[in-house]
Image 1: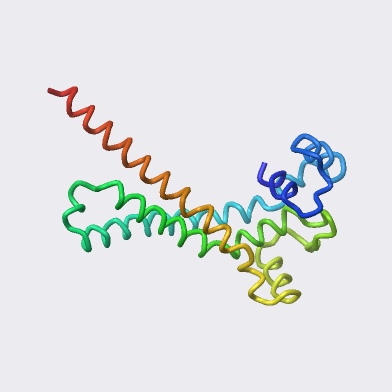
Image 2 (image 1 turned 180 degrees about the vertical axis):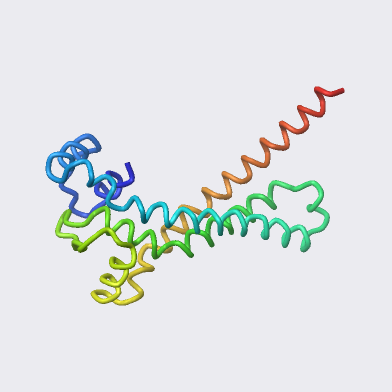
Length: 174
């Protein structure tokens, strides 16, 4: 579905919708078109998740040290702030991999460049040779603007749910 999403987001997308994109892609490129960037997606998910979790925990600790009155109770503001910062950092760090993933997913569509193979390094080299190293940072701001509130909402919801279930569990024991 990520391949379909990326292709529908192209400026002059030749597809009228999700089903049209799936049908045309299957007919013209075969099922393998949906997996062109699978390795890149996996390679991107590992550092994204590692940075996201590590920076969230570090952010909670730092905020707890700065605002000790909130550290014990783990206030919502701590989770929102640490979560948002974690999402921003993780998305910024992995933007080059996201650019490569998107380029591999959309190659040949609407005149987009084609790559010799699905290699992350080969695609990165080609992008840098053709457009310069800053091309790997294209879309960083919108990516961060998406992941910052998403992570803040996710972490604060998770922590609130965890807190609720812990209290409920404690009440059940009484």
